[in-house]
Image 1 (cartoon, rainbow, N blue to C red):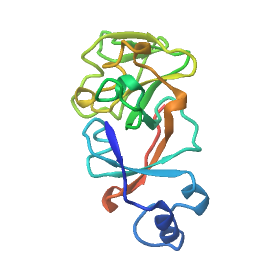
Image 2: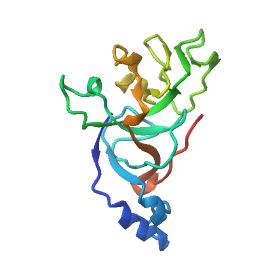
Image 3: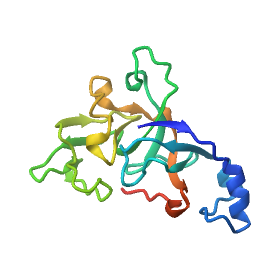
Image 4: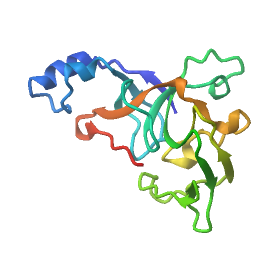
Amino acid sequence: MRLASALTTIALIAGTTACGGSGFPAISPVEARHLHSYDISSTAMENTLRPGDVIAANDSVKVQRGSIIVFVGPPSWQDSPGGHGHLTFVKRVIAVGGDHIVCCDPSGRLVLNGHPLAEPYLYPGVKASDEPFDVMVPIGRLYLLGDNRPMSADSRVHQRDHDGTIPVSDVVGVVTRILKPPGRAGRVPTHT
């Protein structure tokens, strides 16, 4: 999923919520210094993130399995050959360096380090993956999938480049909040 920088000014939201208003989840001025906002424009992370959501990614939160991250796409993730690496994407971290991730067991579940992976965030009715894969994630890299797998161009699509993994250094931040619309505003849980 490609993201466009949001017009939302997090500092303004932080100032408003610190005073106790506006319907946004409370954001302290200290936290606001680490947040970057983005508009969601794709269905690749539904139902967790939906088109029209404005999210906040925190650059001080540690990336772990289950984190939803914003990252600068490596050249192989860009739309055209020779892309400049400026496009940002959002995906869920399924496996980290040293993990072995396989699709799929006889029940259709991903297998992480020999154990079936519970994925309560999957879009209702979708499979863990239609494409088989078997990846040992190198140290310092991440294996990423969207929550709405049929609509997500994720690590499975980029298997020719480092088995679809991206370097941890490409991460902009961990998505911690939905800022807008007000009816969806709140913290984004991390599933591990």
